[in-house]
Amino acid sequence: MKETADDLVKRTFLKLSSDYGFKHTFCTPQNAVVLKNFLNALFEGKMVITDVTFQDKEVLPPDENGKRIVYDVYCTTETGYHFVVEMQKEQSPLFGKRMVFYVSSCIFRQGEKGGSYKFEPVYLIVITNFNMKPFERRLVNEVVLMERNTNVVFTEDVKVFFLSLLQIHKDWDDCETEIERQLYLIKNMENLNKESKPYKSGKYDDMFKAAEIASMAAEDIVAYRNSIMIEMERESALEFAKEEGMEKGIKIGREEGREEGREEGREEGKLEVARKMKNKGMDLGDIMLFTGLSKGQIEML
Image: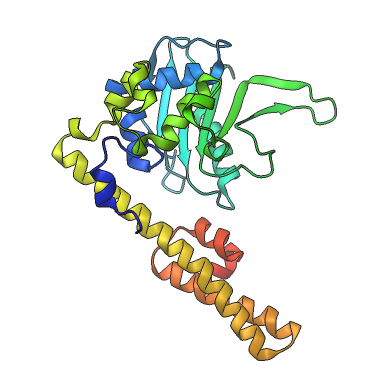
């Protein structure tokens, strides 16, 4: 039987890979130690973070026609470094451009009128439920600006890290590094309880305490349930759209009996699915991802 939002609310801990679960556990000042431990695990001693200060997650554009940004997490360290941490469930067509936009905005907002072009380093960390294309399938992909032919790094002041939860397929005892263990907890927290090895180790008390459902206020539990319901409905709609598009395209193509008919049928099926997704108010990027249609084609529907 398919799991429901009510099933998840009855668990011991939050689903950390969900939007609400991630933000509740990592993105609040009272849980700053959870975020700090996660960042230190990622850098493995190459950088030691002793404190984080949460910044305003909403960035308003300089004029009314600009683009508003809302980060999952935006913080600075005691050394002045800027960190943005995001949880991303699907790779939409414009996902890469959005990440570049996020980094650029963090740099731009540090500028001062009449000042130099000096800015503190900006690091973007993206936890994904997919393997980031076009990179190799690995746990951590680190992106920097470099000269293409020699691979000489141009600057260390801008970095993007993509961390794939799909690469965590080990049991807890098989996790060898601290970042593997942290990502294991993010991926599997809702399936753990107080008898599990990670909990009994005592090393991750801060994360378990932040993610414990029983300690949440009643209104927060309701908000969590509603958030999970919305995510499940969205995932169901996307799955339906994929299946509907493929089935309709194949059916019409068979009726035509020719290659041209099959191509025409697939295109018609995509348009019909895109129309349904658009009517449901789904994100333009998601529609483009699951139908293969262009932005212009979808906007004309």
